[in-house]
Image 1 (cartoon, rainbow, N blue to C red):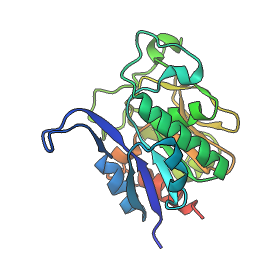
Image 2 (image 1 turned 60 degrees about the vertical axis):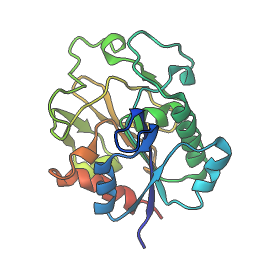
Image 3 (image 1 turned 135 degrees about the vertical axis):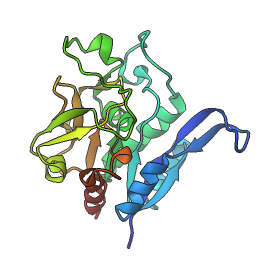
Image 4 (image 1 turned 90 degrees about the horizontal axis):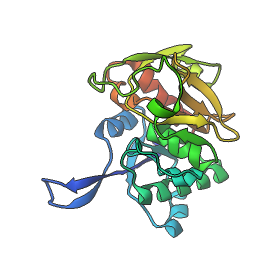
Length: 238
């Protein structure tokens, strides 16, 4: 039986031209297609009140945390620096609560880009609010590419891990972020890094929690290894 995979929704802050509505929920269609191609059934997850979060775990088999706006730094005890971009606190509250409950229930989750940051902050880790001013590496790569989003622009090295079992020792990935994991949360290990040392992948001991900094949902159509990331995630679901 196909697994039901929740996909956290982003919010379109402007007014949509289709339904003339502000703050319309949406999930990235390439990610919907990736879940389908990997054998799952995608289910969009708009923000829910805190007292409704628990009900999701009775209905879903896994949850993917998607890309989107910056994470509000006050959730890790920091005030915003000038380079912080748009944040969406209601989304943060929903997703942080969802991550914490998933970890308590040993429920399989996958993070993509912002999803990596949310997972790490929810479990007690920290992130860079902005790599360009906080990372301190003179040879920092361009982590927010101008190339089309489906094209890879830099390599990552992958340590022994479930991610390495899926992708091999290295991968050529796309890059659309200015935040990144700074200190991994307890129980999460670094499994992928860019040539400049920026953390590109984290997971726990059994990969029931796995997260990558790049956007495999935009690459899988041209790179079968990136589709395997979704397939192997679904295979890990009992």
